[in-house]
Image (tube, rainbow, N blue to C red; front, side):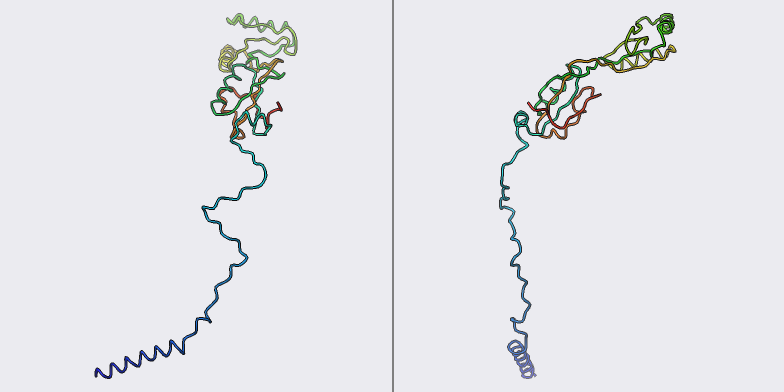
Length: 223
């Protein structure tokens, strides 16, 4: 019994040996891996990137260097009619690491918020209204004598809109139809030339002042 088992095991081994040498497919018929000749070579992560040729301009230049070099990373903000507003806005911008140059040029200066009753057809009609104002205890007024607003009744010019609105509400409560207009006069107005990294994303709301009538121009004038 054991002899027959050993004989069968021997025949199995001989069969495996014969298949390995004469019957299996040789390795030289195996598929050939594709060639990668001509494809771009890989760049390892630690390899430094290739430097572009030619001069480069860095945005990390100081604001003053940008302004003096005439580089377009500069914005002009204005017109600012109040000196205090220009000073406060400049300080705010410098606190944000911008370079700021203040300058002035001819323009329309903001005077204030004018509370008034619209012009009557003549002075006599305006005096009828002023008599009614006086009878109701309102004495701080005058009739505009000349100009485009002749015979209008001025009831005060206020630097703050809130104060003008309170005056307007008082007159309305007494039955008078008044209005509020912004008043300007010709004079010097201020501009801020702002430069530095990130100035192209600057918003007027960051100035911390009344922004009515302000605009941001794309670049500063040449110096």
